[in-house]
Length: 71
Image: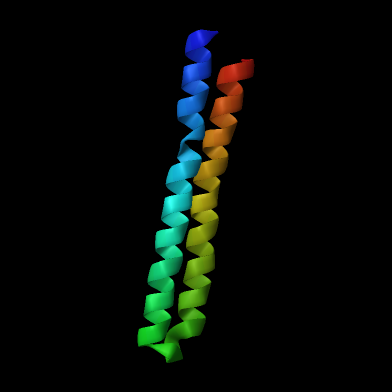
């Protein structure tokens, strides 16, 4: 059980990476809108898509952690 807890903890750390990725993505999107305000619609749609994909990585890490603990 000790190794399973360590593995689950490492799997949950994907949430940290996802949080950093979301912050960097949002920061770069704001920079892009500041540089080209006329492209804000396209930038926003790409931002929402990329944030959804990044969030799915965090959810996969959480699911893997649950599988490690309970399976």
